[in-house]
Length: 464
Image (cartoon, rainbow, N blue to C red; front, side, top):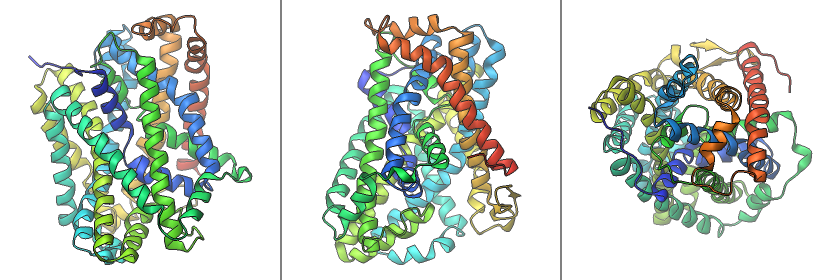
């Protein structure tokens, strides 16, 4: 008989859930979005969305998971609404697709540890060639997936929780070390001004749209990961407090990642901040160039430490992404955990092969796979999957989970679950706000985000 296990402590749950939220989206995606969004103004909007909108959705997902002690599909069935389990199935598909391309990027970062350790800063000018060496970078990706599977195969308390308790403090220590160093560089203050002094004239519909998307993705919402983690939480746990701590940890690490990245860009650009919106190139091209400029043993140490940090952040997320389909297979198919883990890891790695091929090795998967309507430009397979799973399915999933909790399962039942372990919750302002946010704000805002994304990504219609 398959057993589920559970978190052994409150700290373990918070560390694991925060680790699920903290990942490449914080270390890479957040600085990139800040750069494109004009700096500090984006940061303000991002923080507002995390607490005003994402916090209620996260608490709701955890509450549903704890109430049912099931995976995202089984949770809806356990509550008596089997017809709604398509929302959970959609989330699992999204998680599988996201992990398939996320692991490819993590593999690149893993390989860069060795490049930096050997002082090969010239890799910055060879990134396009690097990604076409599919057996080399594919091997790195396979090692990363195997590491992820090993952690998940050890169970909740013995694997995921233990890894999170080790990885999260180490991650924070490494980021803070890099922050202290980056602030000592020439022109670092220009990066800090760009990052922390808002120019609200730069706020427009596109910035608001991107800030909401970044907040929602960075907190791992809409795919059932928090439903899954919630299913392993003790009934005495205060979900409201835990959710607040998880949100604070996520935005806190994203924030200090910015304090690390933007002084480095200020140093490299001579204070012009050129390259702040560099996308993938920011991490794999611009930063290695910076480490090369630092030069010598110090450049090697700083560069190696950065990519170790990036891999630690990626691992905390890949573990939670793999746990979602594994929990489904364990619960619904009664497969033993270890077998379920390695089967799903193998399937997801294979699903990610087109993404691996789509950065120059295969013309079909690199440019000719499909053409988005946004500007009529060809796109690669990885970007297409990201647009489908990350940009489209996640906000739809979040919208439907919030609508279900408030209007199908009913707010009273959600309140009852949230009140367990939180004796002061009922009758509080937070309860009233949760009812409003889950019942109306989240479904409307996330539903609108989904519609805008689909119109823009797949039909070329831009309303904002």
